[in-house]
Length: 297
Ligand SMILES: [Zn+2]
Ligand SMILES: [Zn+2]
Figure 1 (cartoon, protein in one colour):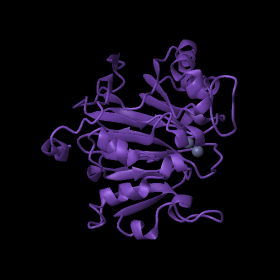
Figure 2: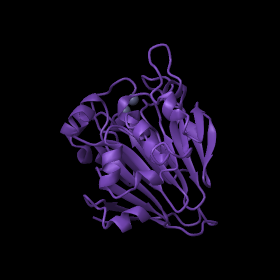
Figure 3: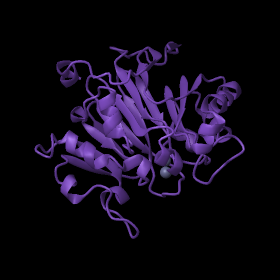
Figure 4: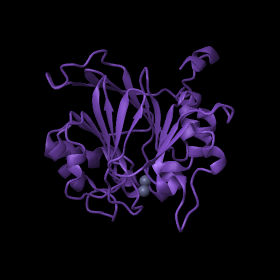
């Protein structure tokens, strides 16, 4: 499968060295039952370029599907966690072990809200202090926080979710422009302002049409955001059980129909290669190649 979306002329006139950022969807499921059953995987998203190797939201399966896709977790430079729900953080410690070369080298960045790093009244930290002491830089996120990973500025965006500390992300990548990720949120007035000007908007659409749920979106609310932001491409992900049974391709089609913005329902193992054009490809299972090949990635 190959879909190519042409970059709008003139909006990124200073961009050089295009075609070198890749997003790999190691999971497209969300919510308790999609996670428990693994009807869709919940490994999160890997963002890779020559200078970046970031894992976003390492839910259950992050380690396994990373290895299966041939993406060496020891190359990760930063782990970003949007909030303290298990489909977003469960594999964080094991990725920290990979990132720190088996806890032997103080290395890498973990950026997450305070309830992940410190815990709160109801919870302890989601990453142990033992693991945190080997992370080179821990960053506590709030909406509006700015931090850098390699050459990329990352802004934490606002959400409205059942975990009130949840943040989304806006990646400002010099080579290719901006990518937005809403994380888990319901629609609220002004959410579109967080993502104006992004080329790709990754949007969590957990529920099907006619089945709204507090803290989440159906295609109806996603349409409002996509229509206001008008990215080059919208990518819907984080499908819950009801959405999976209704059929994400069918449900997500409404977003493109109403907004005119090319919109896809992400699938497990999907790769988006982003340069001047956006190409959609598929990860081959057990794509590890030779051991030598694997170590180089
Ligand atoms: Zn979730
Ligand atoms: Zn959540």
